[in-house]
Length: 197
Image (cartoon, rainbow, N blue to C red):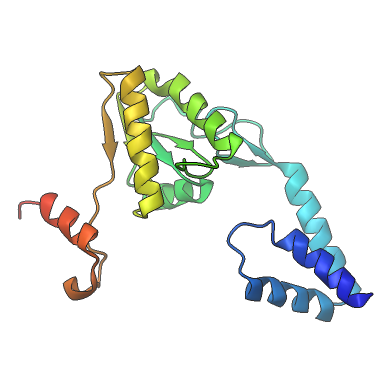
């Protein structure tokens, strides 16, 4: 009976993207070894999170305890749109203070097949707002999957808005990385996008 309950919990936790079997086992071990007060605290925190976190209807950024997106409502920002994969990417750019435009969160990546309907809906939503911006910057990761998604988005945007200014983040060698260990695509892009010193 106990094993059945563990199995049921494993099935639920497997639905969380990015969790390995070992990580799921660690969570279950934590729950097994936690007292009732710790479990109740965790349950309350999850319920509070779900009740008080919303998404901006325009950019998909997460909003905690507020109804309006501070970034979308800021009229002093540049007329540039940075398309990112996750809301955490917005935090990164905002913390670094290197971008003063607007954002759009895809909430995942477009794939060759088996796309989540949410991604397709967000791409359609993105296309409806493109013409409001002077520049569209595709700020996705340097993974092959993200590169495919950016190529798709660029072609799709250009098919609807041929005059749109679409950019992608420049790729380069990470700080502290030896050229010897850098993959060939990154090395090639670093050379092509070299900067004059």
